[in-house]
Image 1 (cartoon, rainbow, N blue to C red):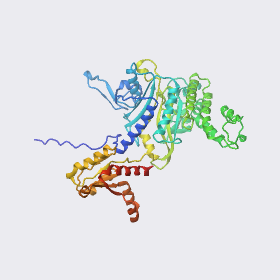
Image 2: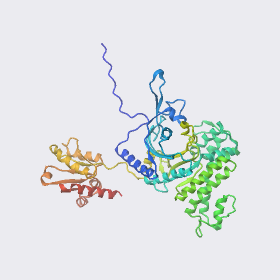
Image 3: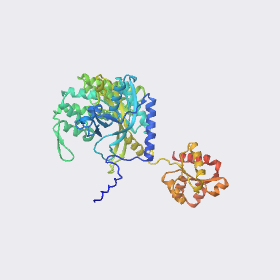
Image 4: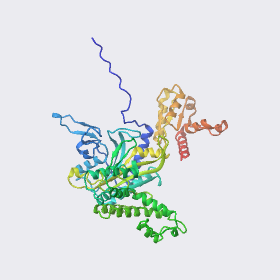
Length: 549
């Protein structure tokens, strides 16, 4: 009789494209989500927790691959008679579920409906460095309002959110564009709706990767990529491609001109210079924003930037109704933001922002962190985008058949956490619990009474629950837990009514660098009456917190 085949042990490994998160990372993320939720709540948004699973039909045309519903998302088919059960999928973002929720419950929800949502999403895509198949998003959306005030509010709230979690002004910039303006540019160059326009949109979406020269080549005949392969272009004539390129470069062009003005005095500027746009020339003629004997000041430059960019865009789409409508919408957003104190030093009009063009119907926004980091090859680069969003007026219509305007933003939680760590705003380790050591296993009730007192006083604490035989192992455990304090009470201390309290943070610092004399002057272990346990532990914790500020 053959022996039954032994089942192999499963491998203890995370699936490809997934990862595990341990204590400090989870704590840091929870705290950041709490801070973000506080800003969203202050703006009047309500929390929504929707199902992690949606029908593939509800996710709809925005699936990464609609022809293969089990590709791009994690999907499966429910069992049913004749194998015709519904296809279900893990949500790939938090916006598509919102559209379904609003359509399903619209009679019970206020209009506009303002909601925020936080949680994991899943994408069945090829993983890469820092790119996982499960990640956290943090969204806020307004459904049911077509007012540009809703879009301006989202941008202002995003700026406030970044500052609330620890990203100072100057380290971020929220860039705003409008899909209608681009449609106007394409209309002006005579490009009708259809495959050619879709190809132009795909090319524009590569602007960040291939730059101005690459976009020019791809709008024309084509280009060689880095691997040497030839990529066919869209085939636009040079006079058609030029307005598209000028649209993408409008913000950069204005920045360059304002930088030039900032380096010259009024006497050095010719207000009739054809290279200067009329809106800048007009302000120059009024002498507003100029310091005596110097150039344009920073506040004036910030006030001018968005107005000048809008002027450039208006010239590009002057013969297009839809394009002019898009510029008017951007102008309204700027006016509303400036009334609240948000100028172009925080929120700027930037036509190079495209945000996956097929999804959006109007304004789009992207939050970019502007400070530099070193990549894995030691090269300097900007940290880049941590949030994006825009207006998507057609998403709910799929369910209701009626147009329902909507706009919103999504923050990439893991990327924002990584950025805060890069800036030193949060550390890799959070503080562990106070550890009550066990000197006599028969007195566990005494130690449990101590830890209960600490917890009731609001202090994170635990009793050592391993083998107490080796006291050194207890301190090693406390070190691995990043514990700030250890409490020690042996038989002698119990008889005398005292406890030993060891400052583990100070002790580690002294052990690392202090001389014997310094060690004597700065004791890291204190004997106090048992009744003073809470007061002394709190004193040490407060001193440690003060030393970290």
